[in-house]
Length: 361
Length: 43
Image 1 (spheres, chains in turn orange, purple):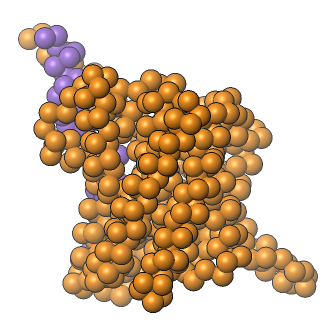
Image 2 (cartoon, chains in turn green, cyan; image 1 turned 90 degrees about the vertical axis):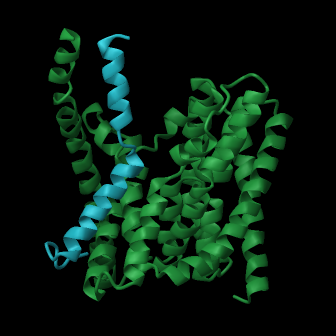
């Protein structure tokens, strides 16, 4: 009993300390993101004032590039790292708030189409990545991690699967490094290819949501193209994220069947535990907006709050990407990931073209 | 079962995921906008 009394005396300090530890990094995210916003406004105006031909570079790209420069030159000091890692939190809060800009009817219409495309994308990507992993003789669990990372939702899917199939730390860090490096490449190549192919906002948004692995990179790749494409990329990516529980459950059962992972007890509880709750939050805010719980000005305010949250996310994407760390992880998983990503990008682009023909976009 | 393990189990039972925290913060912000605490959010 004496022990039971002493433990609560220690516990209350921890959340407060944890909160204090994130402040420097969050301030860094805000500073880098805001600098990106200022650069967008001022560089364009300066170039115009001096009659220079200079492309209009959006704050999204400035924030990511500034973050990349810091991370790959001076590095991110230890004091900022905990706070920088909160970019995932801002991403998810931003997606929930973005729900205010979607009417439920749009979600059902677009979500229905994207659900079909997502199902095809997931099955095709899992099958192809598994084939590639076997061809390159990667360890089976490493192949599984790369497959779920490419097919579903990048790092979150890898972390969720790692626990469920009891994969090694080494395998998961290989897969995470490969997926992050390829996500950084996709961020810059997707908008260029989209413009080269003159894709509409709808086609590009669908493609970015289907083809880019990590939610942060998919959101940024969409926003780099246009506001409308960014909105759609988030919707499609969230549909992909919603599938995570089913895919992880299937792999957990497969590996448990081979005696290399613990059996799954309550499947419904497992699915709920893995389900991304921010997708529910996004839908709920959208329902509220559809039934006029918010007036027009309030929807505008929520949309701007969502933009501020994404600003911190984009700064975080740059700040957490360190190319020399990624190089240390080895070439083979990266090669498998790279070949897989190129094929998946082509496959999802073909899906988008096909859907465009069927639905007459 | 030691007190530490028991305390750990209780803590993890009540620990919210990052997702859930993000949803709660977003809803709090939406509520503050709805009741007029944040009337205008500039961009």
